[in-house]
Length: 115
Image (cartoon, rainbow, N blue to C red; front, top):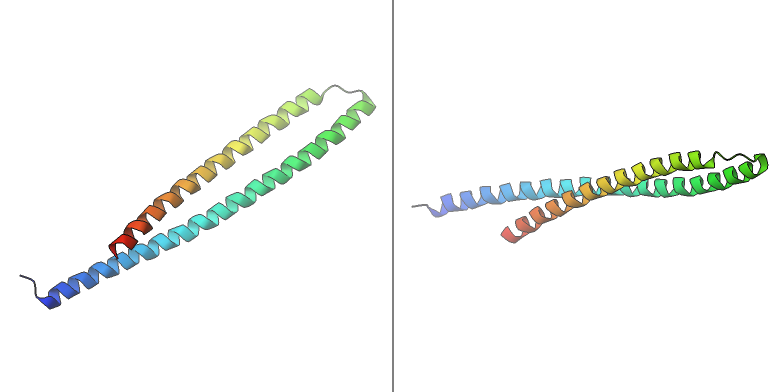
């Protein structure tokens, strides 16, 4: 049979363990938030690049009209492929961040329910 002191020490050790897990979860959340912020910055940069691409396409179209060149289709195909790759990579990063954040929030919720 456990004495009151032993029970108190056991619960204290358990509480300390839970505090450490909560601190780890908070650190992971902070890390995920930073990663999510970086992903958002990359998304904004991709949007900016997309705007720049449209400007360049307009300039290219104007130049083609002046020169009478019909190579625009080849350039557009190349630009379309690189844009698709960027969108796919960004979607993968955001999905990974979301899943990790969801997992950490579930851990934090479980830890808060134990308290």
